[in-house]
Amino acid sequence: MAKKKTSTAKKRTAQKRPKIMIGMGTCGLGAGAKGVLASIEKEIKKQKQPVDLVRTGCIGMCSHEVLVDVILPGRTRVTYSKVKPDVVQQIFEEHLGQGKVVKKYALSQMHHNGKGGRQYKGLPFFDDLDVNKSQFKLVTKNCGIIDPDRIDEYIEGDGYTALKKVLTSMSPKDVINEVSKAGLRGRGGGGFETGWKWDSCAKYDADEKYILCNADEGDPGAFMDRSLLEGDPHAVLEGMIIAGYAIGATSGYIYVRAEYPLAVRRLKHSIEQAEKHGFLGKNILKSGYSLKIHIKEGAGAFVCGESTALQYSIEGKRGMPRTRPPQSVEAGLWDKPSCLNNVETFANVPLIINNGAAWYSKIGTAKSKGTKIFSLTGKVKKAGLIEVPMGTTIRQVVFDMGGGIPKKKKFKAVQIGGPSGGCLTEAHLDSPIDYESLLEAGAMMGSGSLVVVDETTCMVDMARFFLDFCAKESCGKCPPCRVGTTLMLDILIRITQGEGKEEDIDILEKMSDEINTMSLCGLGQSAPNPVLSTIRYFRDEYLAHIRDKECPTASCVALHKYTVIPDKCTKCTLCIKNCPVDAISGSKDEVAFIDKEKCIECNLCYDKCNFMAIK
Figure 1 (spheres, rainbow, N blue to C red):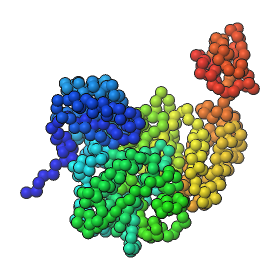
Figure 2: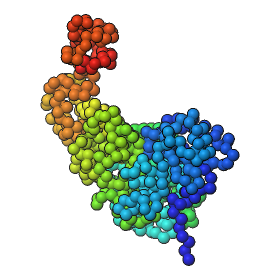
Figure 3: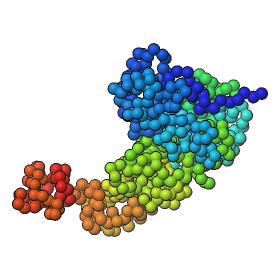
Figure 4: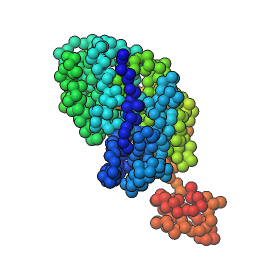
């Protein structure tokens, strides 16, 4: 009789002594996790009974860090939010000592999902954390749950079972077919079919092939790959090894930016552990297949996220894209067949192999399968990392998971896809997030950064910011990108300074089309996207800057003009007393007046006025 398989949830809850978990990802460390950890270790020494201490990655609730979880035997997991070192003692005394939850700091409780728990299309959620009700965590199911530095904890959650299955019962072609049937598309930007890319590379015969992982996460506001590498590095490695087997790779490289020191350290440690356990190196699991994975630390050039530029950088050359053909699958790294996928794509692979293509293809939409991880930042109450099924609406992401806009401000737009993406408006809130819908709306999935802006954000200035980023990150190889983005940036700067002309809008649109058509790589081709989308949806703001010489949101400093609203002025003279250049005249008998010639726009009068009489 076959032995009944114990579920991951049951294995992780069958504990005999108290467990304390602390988020030690970059966001947690930035919020002070080291000090909290020291306090926890101090309290553990005082305990008469042993306590298990687990240092996890980020669970995604970055705005609530430092996060500390307490799990008593037979009890549900309790999450404490924004923990400081001085509250640790109280948590120990009341929760661990008396079994009483310290409600003042408790965020929510986690219940392991049973038969009656929430489901998505008939599929059970792995864990049901109250604060993440709308999410469906598959790829990030281990983040914030396991200690990423301990391979045993990954193995306990069925880690490396997919690799064992592949090496013992599946041919390379079987693996490719399974990934193709699952409908997995690349999570790095363009959304290319993963199985098709693997199959293309597998067809080429060579004495050496390379499997490459793109962890060069350069989008402003993006931290999906970093969080995965910090919280569950073995999932990425396992997917990469399986991909290497499928295409016949002999070596692999993970290209990760050096600005991710914690991710780099954990990756190196995980590779060492995987080699010791026989999951990497020569004759993996005695299957006859061998693979060596190396780490290449990048210097932070955004263009090195492009596949050919990335390969040049690994070779020690300047990171610049090359013309194609040949494609990388035919002649890539060192002119050998090479296959490149990003971090999140590889982390999906073990899920597909363990659960099957039919299971995976139930998740998402008809053409966009599975889940997508997003970094949610900007003017939103609960910034952090989320994972949702493809097809989830922008409204659900911003308002259900992000908690909406702070300070009672109105939602204005969301920049999706980073510098290569576009701005979507309130009219798009109920649009599904999938590859086709975003392209139709004038944006793109990109790597998955979502930057929310409210009514106080100037969309012209936002377009200027992203174009400035792309212009500075251009490698300079092709004139359309090198010269075109710079000329477009000059126009946008003039507009934000009140020196724009109406024909500038037509020029921007025409140049965008030319740069998109003529640039060598994806960076140049997509650089105009934020400009095009803001013109498309916020043309009135461009016209206000050009015709009225005003910024509707008062964000563009060069267009600031300070005036006094007579009906609101109480003649208190506070503005007069605080003006450093005596640009304001008036008295207790007359309304204040601002001399625009003398005004240096320091904003002191606006800040000091208690009656909102300064416009």
